[in-house]
Image (tube, rainbow, N blue to C red; front, top):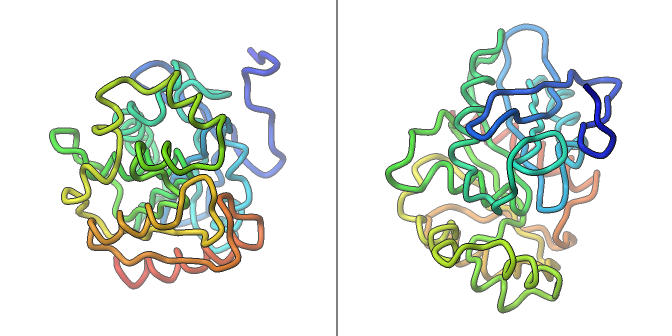
Length: 245
């Protein structure tokens, strides 16, 4: 059944999918590549849905990859209530299990997350005591790696209101990837926009240093990449994933 405003609209070049998740179905779009190919799971930012990651998904597909863009819990197409990435590790575990079971998925399995999606991706591969992630690589773009620091420095007052309304008391620390930086154990790219006024570049630099990973900084990028900037990031991802697999 299609419910306007709740169901993801169709895309002409992608297959709609509904995957079983811990809190109900997780909806998204799948670009399937013929034959054996690497795969990427793409995760959107807060206030978005799977459609927000169409540009990098199509670019990855054109580069010879399978690409799954998923609506995170509580956003259009997916069941449950948004909790700003707290349930990310469990939900991504279910999504990655589905993705690895698809015919032709072989080689690197990359999590590509923007903003809150980057937070979810980082938590899923670094929080101790959780299930072992199937992801082999992570690319976190403009991710809020330290929730308290982002709250204190962001130019977006609406973000502070959202954090006050959504975050549980323990989430400020436990939901911040920087808390778990020492547990990061897969190759990771931390992508930074030098003009980001929502998640200050210095916060991402400090996370990269704590996690022992190389930041990838773009002088002309703000918080959200445009289509051309996504193309640059995707080219870097494809080359890097091949070199580090």
